[in-house]
Length: 506
Image 1 (cartoon, rainbow, N blue to C red):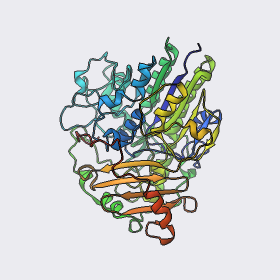
Image 2: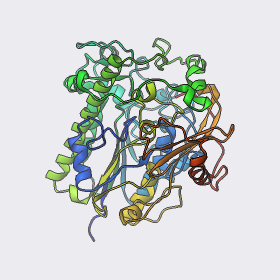
Image 3: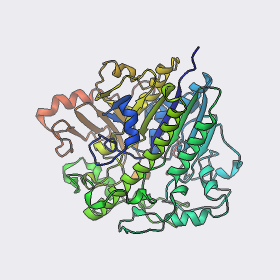
């Protein structure tokens, strides 16, 4: 019998669906494009949740957030549900399962120690030679502080990436150097060109660990999740990536002013709530408030976009290293390669930066390209989700799996259609300043979001209004579309479980 296909799942953090080659923006990703050119590209793939923990739990489990309990950041995924997910399922089928990079399956900043490896207050319990198992993966190499909006803490606080930075006792100095700005200088607090050399950045570390894993190989088929923490904010990159794009020539969003009077009530309430500023964060007490409250001017936004594109270019380079090695070693043809992201980024749309309960297309839609055995070449516009990946990989590899909330994308590649893809978020006033039962559906042509608590909503016809300027929720002419899409939402669908307890903020 021929060997079962290897699986290489590559993810990023906070990368918009239009920020790959051919996606509509000015970013260049020649290596991600290589995957799409020999395989499938899904142009209407959405995240099931716009926050890291819930979105990642959905990729792992194949379940929507209300079915795995991680309804927001700060709520831990049950390890039993994780073990029934992607890695555990393939591990029991004989796969060598590995994870490299940012997991964020459990909460970093917690009120009390939780016992999880990714908890700042529990990580010291884990020996320096600990490599798993974790959330169904046999072997892991993790980042604990992948982003530079928190301070440094010396060992034993840290995981594999932090120990790499601190291998010679210079971890704190390197962490501080990453926050030093180099020319050309920027003004906005969320963006700068970093003085730290590229070899110490998390993108390079993840890429190097992935290459080590690929070179080592395995006598079993491998399922490997390679998870880059970028281009998550704060937006910083090292040379040469930081200056790869000229801010003067990047593409600005056509509508980049706040327009809160034209939106449902929660848009303004979220932005104006003080709750996000008043959370006690003992691991970030020496750091500035990183949320964005001020109006974006074009100069600052150009800097953000230029560095954001540079961060993506650095990741694309590492993707190219992996593809080149697999091709040169004759393994590419028997490897299912998938590239996607956990969620998107506003990036100036409607005057917004970062993420929150305003599910504009830049935040909701993520890239999804894949190639390998059983994948039909083509470009598909059916509404799909990263929640479909577990079912898709099981189908491609001939594994029987327990039911989940996803559906194999092989059906779409065979010409099948989908009506909608779903996103759901129990927004918590303790963390976000508003309480919402926020449900979103995306069809090929429309996006509808509704708060089931207040009944307020928004509806946009993306075929005629791609920048989501005109809310059709109360339009009589759009009522049939609104009612049809709203009917696809099940307030209490089978398989829902209670929200996991809130154990922290992030």
